[in-house]
Length: 145
Image (tube, rainbow, N blue to C red; front, side, top):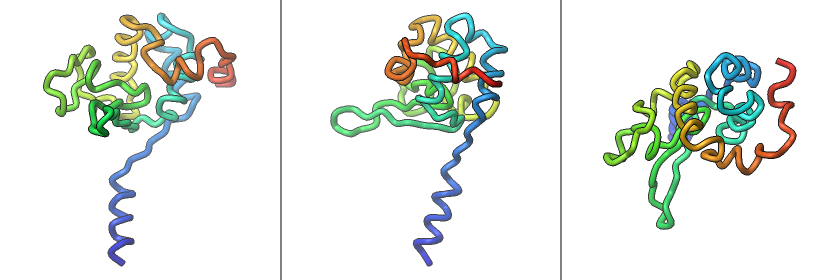
């Protein structure tokens, strides 16, 4: 019984909220992100970085296994370079936002910050894009919406 109660609490505490591919296609198409890459590039990136999960958090660990930083939201915005999560007092916070602001179905904060990242570093700032999207046929990520 105790195990069931603990599992129930864990399931409630873990929020998985994936938006649809077409919702993301439309949001990207109507944003400044298209100045930096195609809609297909952005949707492919989001698929490989977060599986379109707007509440995704991925913890980056150093060689000792300690948490070094975390990546937040649908575009996996990094807490050391681009947003502030309260854990890294020396974080650069290049987008001047709280990381929690990217954990929402309202994509505006994520889109704004991703545009800053892309403007400064290009799409190669994201390993999900580099390893899975760059130079590959990806138009299917944008088609049919």
